[in-house]
Amino acid sequence: MRNATERWMLTTGLLVAIGIAAGVNLIVPRFEEAFQNFGAELPLLTRLFVETRYALFGLPLIVLAAWAWTPRRTPPGNERGIVALVIGFGLGVILLPLCLIAMYLPIFRLAAAVDG
Image (cartoon, rainbow, N blue to C red; front, side):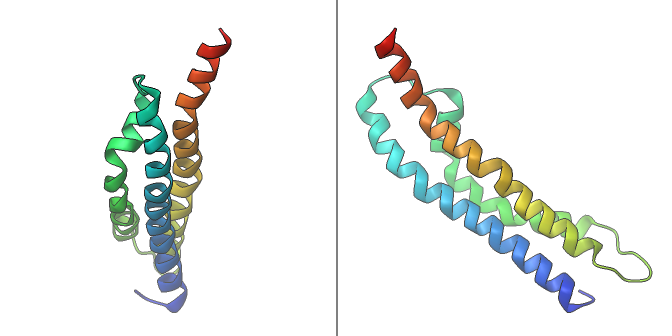
């Protein structure tokens, strides 16, 4: 790493990715207990989060790979750090709302079945 700013951006991107994985792994088990009482088949998106939630701890590797594969510029800039930061936050912007949607989807389907 060439400067402290790039190091800070990479560290922040990695911490955000770790936080996303930890957050999903805290959210999913709480819903999983309720899903067992439903007795119905879970939607695909919900099953993906329930069955593969531990794989999300690999997200920091995606941030590191994006950082490592970003070419260095001359004169040195913070491009690599910016990429790591954007990837880390981008994963959060996509995965956390998607996880919440996936967790509430069976509840919405159950409500629709009761109303219908």
